Image (cartoon, rainbow, N blue to C red; front, side):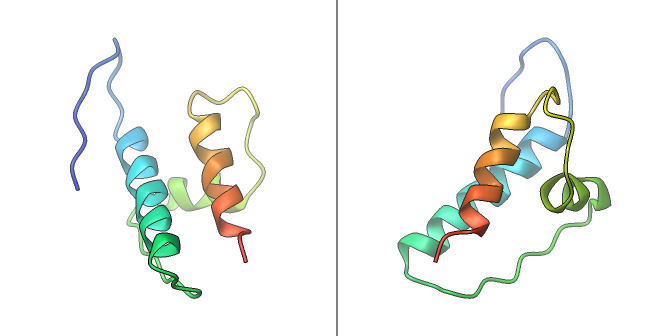
Length: 72
């Protein structure tokens, strides 16, 4: 997958978060129950697994990923 866009700032966090989000959606659509996901960004992992600042720029995507991780 690839993502491209510009909104007045540049960050590699949003494309990585979106890749995780869409990968999780694809795995759920294909009825996988266990998923192992790797990321080379320790910061991304902390944003997803730890409590994050609710005013963080990408909070909606992070919250959605957290929701996907709780699906049964």
